Image (tube, rainbow, N blue to C red; front, top):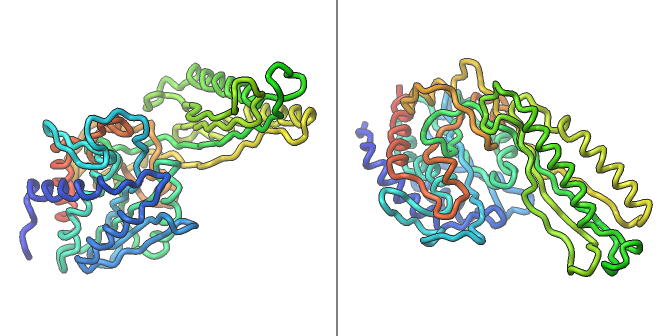
Length: 394
């Protein structure tokens, strides 16, 4: 059996792959198929057949593949292919090209989370080598994580049906290669208010959608403040409480017209065990009452609230296999950790898989202009992948 590559060699290979992955503009509003096709070609060269799980219109796809024997007890390496937009951000280098400066690898997605994808793909020749592993590695690459973890559930369902039962799932979100065993859930909503246009001096003849939106957003702001006041001091999260924010607002056509429509988006992020619907119930009741009042004046007007996504929280597992394995691979003996962001870990856990989060880079760099991952993080990730190969060979 050929010797394993060195950590330095695997890290160098991963960085070369990262330089190929970053130029794929996989912003969530666009297709990820070019990147998926590239990954399929890399795996095909190793004799590995990958399976696509497309979205409804076929413009995007998840991808999963098994490297090594078709046996139980393997490990899933999970990551998302999409990235957040660069619109309006002040980058000092081309965002969709890998640029190295002072040991940092800059580019959109380097940290969140193409660095982890590159590490998994760099290690793929090792994992796929005939006779190398006694238990497999399964790659699971999703779409639309950044807009509500929309892609992963269909892929997870297929994996549960068709893949030999793995012992652990490792989601490679940025954690500085330290093991994380919990995250908040996220529920997102779109609120559309329809008013009645009129001259802005004749408020009695119309209804401003913007003014109604302000009332609703004020109630959400009050709810967010109450959640902060009532935060559990023993919570391991930072911030400790469920958080609520309005992320986007769009309304009106001119300064002197009562707005016909206003749309805003908000998200609620809850720790494990906290029910988002229970938190929002008073707001939704108030909105329904206001909707009836609006319709009484103008029947075509109203308030429409639609849940866009609901990603479950990820709860710490007592003596979880995934955490035990990941800590061994990462050389991590630190205290238990949780993160405030939401990821696909909760979805894997909800499907019955022992799950953990561990990946290169810091979440503080994610979504920022000049996003980067440190070269040393890629080196730690390479050592992690080699230890995984050794573990699954035993």
